[in-house]
Image 1 (cartoon, rainbow, N blue to C red):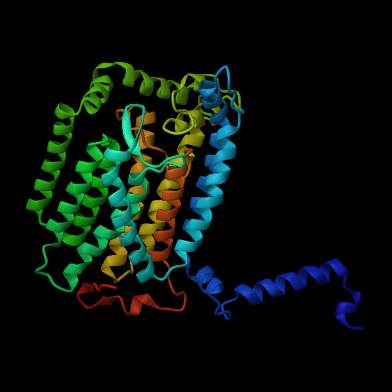
Image 2 (cartoon, helix red, strand yellow):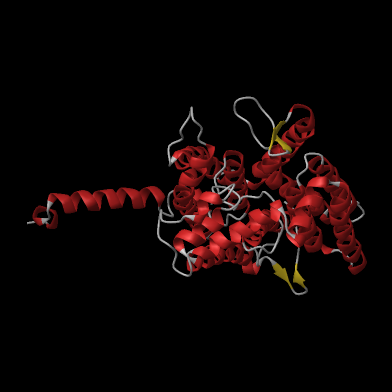
Length: 411
């Protein structure tokens, strides 16, 4: 009697499913899906999906506070209103991330440059057609509004990486000067809104990339001096920046928000008050977006906050370790710029909640509620995964380094 004759039907069925799955995504399968599965950085992808899952839990905890604050006598929002809406944004964002991550590097680069042009034009139209919220004019559109600066961040990182990588082909090209002009143009448009927080993120992306591309010590010093000068200029010329920095330094309305966020974060102690048991969150102005890290602290404890910070560090470390043997300058710059965007934004958001920075109106990547923010971050994640894909059969250690060190190429 054969082995199959004595096996239970459920066992035979399970083995059949397993065999079909193995054949479908096995290394011998050369379909586009299988190639993507084996080349993608599955660890980085898993980490970002974990952050999204954490975000859903955090938004479920923060949603009742925001829903209560925004409810009126005529309209009462469901306590989980923002949780359900976030599910919809993820239903759009995750497919965007997967589709973009499946693009070849050249196609992903082309898409990012086109996005830079398209959203750059929308950013120019914001002062004319934009919608004002909370004293800032950052959104554009009717009915369904988007925030162009959110989508511009990953496109800007990839475009600057492409510009700086051109020096490999022609060292005489003024790539640093041109990239600086592009950043200055974006910064001027952002400060017209005004949006100092986004301007700082764009500056951080640009500075990290030009630093990695090889700047002299003199230019680095001048760039840092220019950054300090820009902050001073924003302080003296833009009333919103002046008010927020003064409130952070000397106390005031803005500082009261940051101080309240800090008190909310520490209200739950190390282990938290428990899911749904937080009370201080009902006094937070933006519990589901800017101050969601504080809601996590109150309901799940400081240990949970530390775990989230560690997850971001693991993501950054994983991506940078994967670049160690990369010999394409553009790829190294693009991936570094994208991870600088995600890591920098996370650091600023957590620092605001910890009362270390003045209020910036910046979301926590993959965790905070938001339509434009979530879809744009999924777009950035897709680009990051597309540029960090690796052929598992290619021994890069034999080709990337010559006897004098790392030899750069451009794709």
